[in-house]
Image: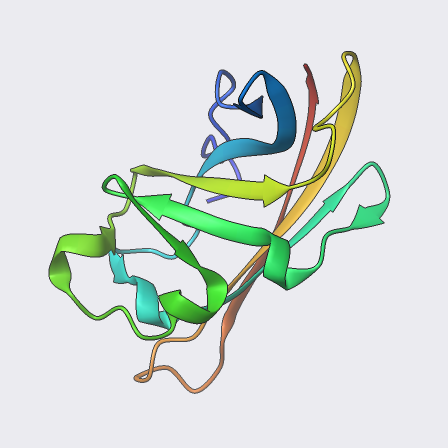
Amino acid sequence: MAARVIFDPNGFENIIENGEAVGFRFRWKSQYYRGITLSIVHDIKVNIDGEDIPSEDISMTVNGETFTLDEMSTVVDSDYRWEFGDYATVNVKKAGGLAKGPHHLVAVQHIAPSYMPFPWITECKADFTI
């Protein structure tokens, strides 16, 4: 799977509310080998330019609905599946968003299906420009 495109190259942007940057977002694909319910996404870690983002400042949007990491653990509705090959959006609260210019992102997907004896943990990296 290493050759698959993980991040949407056009999916990196600041989140603007009332004319002010309040965070940033990116779009990425699940690195698990099939579609999944959100309840088996046990964690998402985000590090931007060497700064770890607290879990409470991370949410994910799938099929038009946004869930915190805590909420995702309870989502078993098949309407909110992260299908293989589909992009999901990770939203990060960060006052001021990201400055214009280059950035380095390290994001980790921690997916734990009940039928596997180990979690599926994938570190994904990207360099991009805002």
